[in-house]
Picture 1 (cartoon, rainbow, N blue to C red):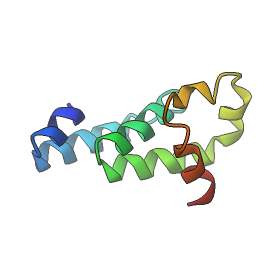
Picture 2: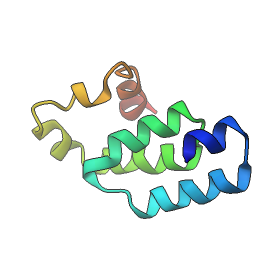
Picture 3: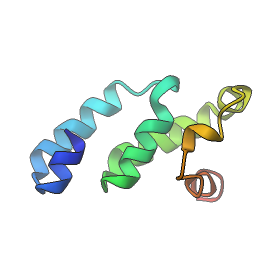
Picture 4: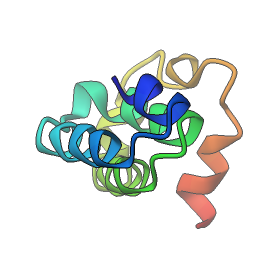
Length: 83
């Protein structure tokens, strides 16, 4: 839905989807939501997910595959650390 709302520039739908994503933000989906916020220009979920990642950085690092979860968006890791 976020992709479609961004593509068709349906502002109210995009805001609604972002709020629902924020409500369902968890450790297990925080990286995916952070990447989605970046890809689809969804600043609210991007910032909420980034803060959630920062708050749970030790948990994320404890996962052996944490770097791979960023896929081809590894540059976003820098934003988490230095923003």
